[in-house]
Image 1 (cartoon, each protein chain N blue to C red):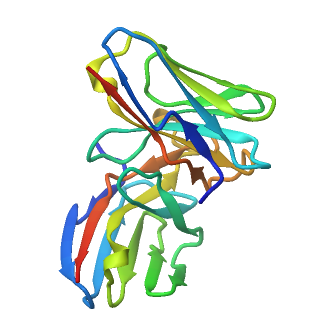
Image 2 (image 1 turned 180 degrees about the vertical axis):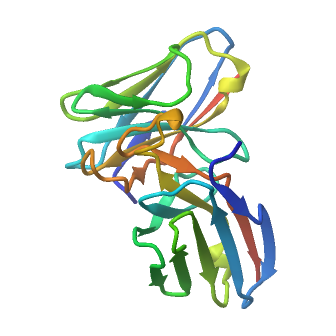
Length: 118
Length: 113
């Protein structure tokens, strides 16, 4: 069972469209992060959300943390080909002993693979 | 670029062999974590090192072991390689043990044949 479920798994859109990807869990996380990963590279941190209901913006990307701190969303406005990549959400596993809980351990979802066509 | 470097970038090994992967953490970071990312999956936590001691471990067998050195660089060793060990191995460094934000290297692509 995946602790963090991401949807959709795959998304292919045209340049200029808007999109939202979701990250859901039945567990509460004290913080949640979003990463983008390109083929053959390691994940790159985009944002960390900590407070329930928090909204953070990074240019055309808007991140929201659910009020109960169990879910998050990433919205991209006017997508561009440069946004193409694998978007991963990760929750801190500090309190999740069954998942190797130790401070700094991250629990990742499977990711959403985004393709933006020109 | 994060400042975390891993070597080698690609590696092919035969089933049953042993492999050592290396990671240099970002300057000033004393915590290193290792993750395994199979094709089409998110990274899975292997273990974490803080000040040369293992500080937590995921669901990986004992043939996965590691070291952290006084300069905070780290090694991941895998004995008795199996075909399912084929994956991208990622090293991530953090500023401190209390910090969950991780900075990843580019990874080592291991193929076991």
